[in-house]
Amino acid sequence: MSLEKKRLLISILISLIYLITLASTLKDIGPTDDIDYYMKAAIKYTEWIQNTIAGIAKGDFSGFSRSEIDKYWVENH
Image 1 (spheres, helix red, strand yellow):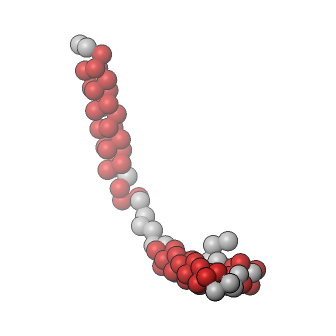
Image 2: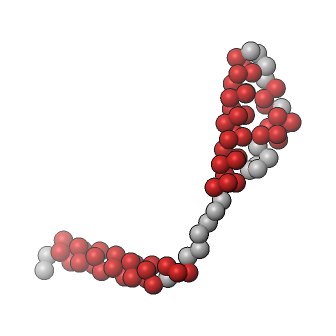
Image 3: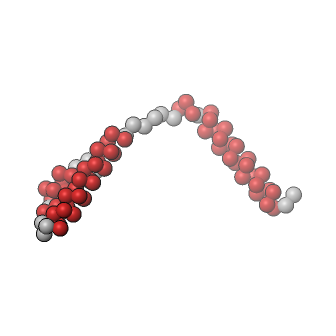
């Protein structure tokens, strides 16, 4: 048996072992529901970026003040 065939066989064997292990523990994997948290944070980050860029265009750099940053980045520091 050539080296390439041996590597292919070993790769398939490892994949099957992984798949069987994963399938046998599937009922133990719990769903996660953190989209509400991260989407809310992402929307606030986008608002900060938009407001800060609009402010910079007008010569206002207050978007970089501690109060403005804390206002928009409170979910994830």
